[in-house]
Length: 294
Image (cartoon, rainbow, N blue to C red; front, side, top):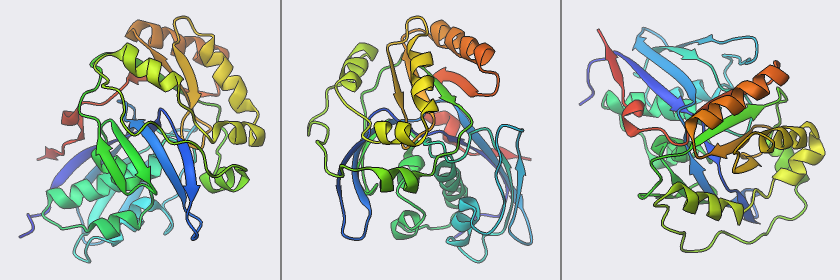
């Protein structure tokens, strides 16, 4: 039985592909992936309240733009749930769009969380219809994603320390465009058995041996991505810099929080038009839970 509609808030963290191996392609065109993913404390917030009809409002700043038209993934997610699921949704948008960090998928996952919190049932089939990343974003915890996004394996042992910076040069880059330009569709997967990530050094050492198979293709399409990677790499005590997903957002990993904060300030000062944020490398589960409003 569904609960009475209520006011809630959900946080939808960015999805960062620490590795992204393209290992094949289905006859239907979908690509097969093998990816190690984390979700930092960086993302959008969605607020929900009772309504007589489905409505979406968007609060943002000049560096992020988004429309609330019928193609918006938030509205698509809401419409697959139930005709009785009528909510007034306010999206506070902080993540750039078409940026390789799953902003749209994370917001769709927040819709699913809200619906489930109210007692609605949402099938795996319907969730998968929203795109490859939504199921992973429902977990929003460190995980390995394989296949076309349907094979999810949570990483139960994960470092308690470590920080990340995300940098986007303000250039949207469509995922489809990058995949279409990728010349080699079948590459080596990650090892079948991953290391036990009991500390941050083990995680860093592993990521350094892996790849993002879309990175060079994305750089060919948008050369500024290479500049972003270089700027991150040159930050003091940066352990690795790499592109996330299909770009153009890139990340840098740091052992100490203060080093990540200093790096983000340095890049912001040098490139004020870029989107730059820092955070702990993974979000705590408690931040994903619904916050009920009176």
